[in-house]
Each structure stands twice: as C-alpha cells, then as structure tokens.
Length: 222
Image 1 (spheres, rainbow, N blue to C red):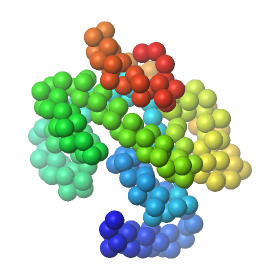
Image 2 (image 1 turned 45 degrees about the horizontal axis):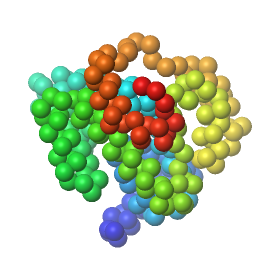
Image 3 (image 1 turned 90 degrees about the horizontal axis):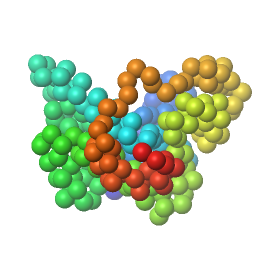
Image 4 (image 1 turned 90 degrees about the vertical axis):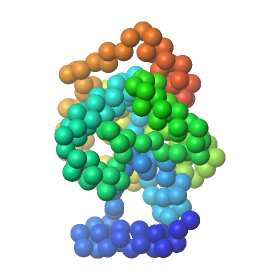
C-alpha cells in the first residue's frame, strides 16, 4: 500500500489518455508479473495477458539474451548505468532476481548465476516466477478471471484462434483488428534461426526444477 504512488500512477495514466485522446492504456513490463494483484486492486477493470514459453526454449532464450547483454555492456559503463537508473535488471552483469518472499531462494539464484551455473539459475528463475503467478491466481478468483495465460507455441502454431482469444479477453472488437489478425496469423512462426543446445544432463536439471510447474501450464515431455 502506497497511497501517494497510487494517486500519482492513476493520474499519470489519465494524463496520457487525455493528451493522446485515447480510451485504453496498454503497458508491457516483465516485472509486472509479480505485481498483478496490486495493479488489479488499483484498476479492477484491467485485463492482463501473461505470456509463457516452454521452459527449455524460454531458458535458452533468456540465457542467450543475458549473454548478449553481458558482452554488449562489458565496455560500455554508461549503458550499464542507464539500465540501473531505469530500473532494469533482467539481464547483464548486474542482473538481479525479484524477492518473491523467499530470501533464501533469491540468494540461491544469485549464487548460481555468480558461480556460472546458468542453467540451474535460470531454471529456478523460470519456475519461481510462474509458480508465484499461478499461486496468486489460485487465491484470487477475480484476478484469475482478469488474466489470460498465452502460450508462445499456441500463438505461433494456432495464431488465428489465439489472437481471437486475446481480443475477446481484452474486450476489443474483433472487426477493428481483422487486418492485424490476418497479418500475424500468416507470419507468426516458431524461430528456426537457433535451437537450444542443452546437454542431456542440463535437460534433466530443467525437467527436475520446472517440470511440475510446466505441467500446470500444459507442457508435457522435455
């Protein structure tokens, strides 16, 4: 609870809607995954889209992104400082993990990253965040009704139906998005420019850590 912030945030969004002459506000933020309950309290009519990807591919993608950030920021301290000022610590040499109420888990993830155990660290990262989000919805039926989990694979393999679900959930008129829906239904595909290169042992680590949570989302074999 932070009444000053809540007033500022509401007024900030209202100002943006006013100056741009719009009725709906859209925001994308990775950190909001842990704030859905709070945001829903502030905006009870909000709709949330929670994207998710199979943990093997998701972890491979996050590790790749982290590696690119670490390489790119190595000789660019100004960019590193800018990310810190902007409050972005998802990737790079100064990456951090959100404390979800379990300090030991947070420290374990940071220790694994620091020790170079990247697969285990990122697997714990994936499992912890989605487990937190799913558990929050179990205990809050209103939040659950306001949230649509969107699997990346469904968006690529069954684009038209998934886009229609998104529009329905967000209370957006289908007829206004027909051109956009057709465009992406014809172009969305799973990436073919790289494939995860995990060893059998690393796949076993991901399975052991993420398997149960992944199964709740509908992901089967690894």
